[in-house]
Amino acid sequence: MARCPHCPRRENPMQLDDAIRIARAALPHFGLDDAAPIAFVKYRENHVFRADDPAGPVAVRLHRPGYRDDDEVRTELEYLRALRAAGVPVPDVLTTTGGAPFVRLGHGETERLVSVQRWIRDAAPFGDIAPALSGEHDPEPEEFAAIGRLLGRLHAAGDVIGRPAAFRRGSWDAAGLAGPDPLWGDPSALASLTADEREIIADGARGLFARLRILASSAADYGIVHADATPENLLVTAGGLALIDFDDFGLGWFVFDLVTAIFHHARNPRYPDYERAIIEGYRSERPLSAVSLAAWDDFMLARGLTYLGWAAERPGDPASDFISAVVAPWVVEIADAARTDRPAPWRVPTSTRQTAWTETV
Image 1 (cartoon, helix red, strand yellow):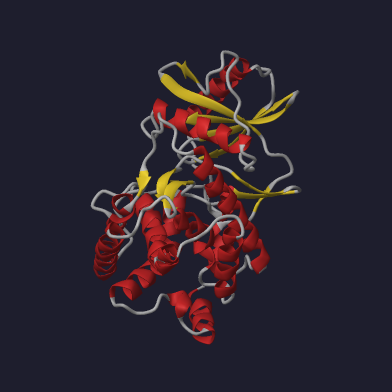
Image 2: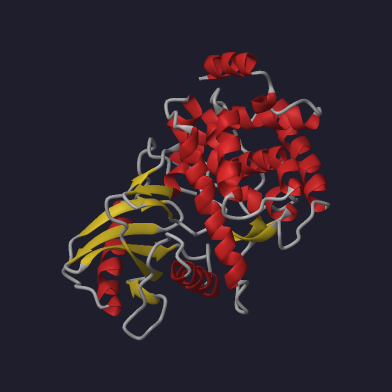
């Protein structure tokens, strides 16, 4: 999950100093200048730095121990190289001078696996979560059509690339999204929930799990997905959109990527236009089945539950606090509608939706 841009950076100065030393020590392994200026970018699951090598800036990522093992990281980096070779606008992964996708280095008792990608120049995020939820970020539908086209290209390339023999990643399937032990944690365990809200979330997750377990998962609907195509991970460049941060990519329903890209804009009165645009954009590159579209609102609930689970696992984190205060009430509303067979909030008449949206911001 990307760092909330409105939340203060979580960092320990001593840990950050060690991380900088490791990042700098990694540069020569990738044929880069170890004297290049290094700047801290963010810390969420991994430390990320920008190094301004004479040949061009790069992103240096220190992978958090215990989050992804060597095989999972290798799968990610090798798949990124395959996507880029297929013409999908994703980061350009560097290999070490020995041809390896990463290097393992330590400083004192601290050891990290380090990978490097070329920095995408003159790029800005499509948006970020807080302004999207509040309505301050009010893009045109065509912008979502472009996102749909990008995700369609991503999945179409995956159809051709296939699943590598050594593929090792998690699955955003029924269990991964809403099962007893979901990938990002138990959403009903979020400490900020009231007892009634906790029951709504738990009940909503149980129903969702039952529905997803019987949902078709043919090659037309299910395969390799990004799984975190949030506004922060969609970069606007002079050449069009690019997609970054494949830290959570794995197997899942393709429609989950589209839903992730639009989830935070669902309270916007123009949401129906956004949904039509992203679907039409996607279908201009790759088919999207009626089965997937019928489950759209279920995946919206699934996306919301993953955020609550993520926050529940990280109490005290600034992004977790933001999710508890701003995102959780919205997810409770979605879950309550789903468990009582009422229309999802974004399916109610425009005038009603706009009033509710204004009152909750």
